[in-house]
Amino acid sequence: MTNLTWHDHRLTRHQRASRKNQQPCLLWFTGLSGSGKSTIANALDVALHERGYHTFLLDGDNVRHGLNRDLGFSEEDRVENIRRIGEVSKLFTDAGLIVLSAFISPFSSDRLLVRNLFPEGEFIEVFMSTPLEVCEERDPKGLYRKARAGEIRQFTGIDSPYEAPDRPEIAIDTGTLSVDECIESIISYLSHNHILKSV
Ligand code: ADP
Image (tube, rainbow, N blue to C red; front, side, top):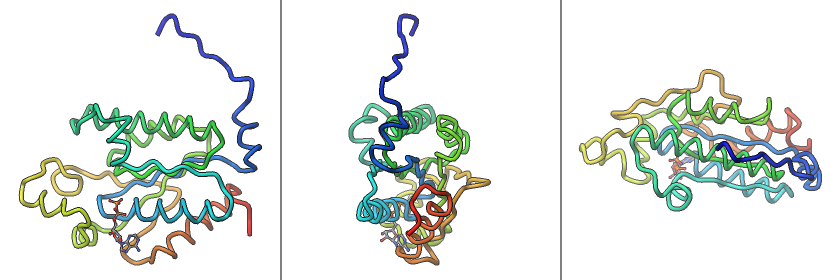
């Protein structure tokens, strides 16, 4: 690190964002497996794109196939997984984009680490508060069944803890809200907080 110099860009993040005519932010979806992070982040991505916003979606499995394919599921690697995703999200917001990240991210300390990379108001924690029973009943990838059978160890919600956020900017229970209602609720938050233009 000693011979590295931080280069300030001639173009600022503000200039990049204003060229896109938008306020960049990171929407950080956190919640149990099957709580709806991926479904809602994808639907919101489409909804924002259709409204003319410039967005980018980072999704758990996809990142593990590329950028983080050298990482496993040890505690150290899970922390590093989230750290790298935070740094990449930061670069994308510096580029002026609205970033959506969907990762279980069960530990408050890891989420705080990412939050601290961002200016006040730019990190928006979206807690998928869908109860474990609903997630397990859905079991979209069959992972809960495997975890209950002992075929997967350290599975969040079963034999590894999920630390729910204390004060998320947005909380959504997909067990009681439809996909459209979830999107509406997030868009309404973003409009109220002047991240999206009011319609
Ligand atoms: P995660 O990314 O949190 O693991 P997914 O989005 O992959 O969760 O899975 C959620 C599952 O729940 C999907 O199969 C989805 O179709 C289903 N589902 C049912 N109702 C809803 C809802 N209101 N919002 C989001 N997902 C829902």
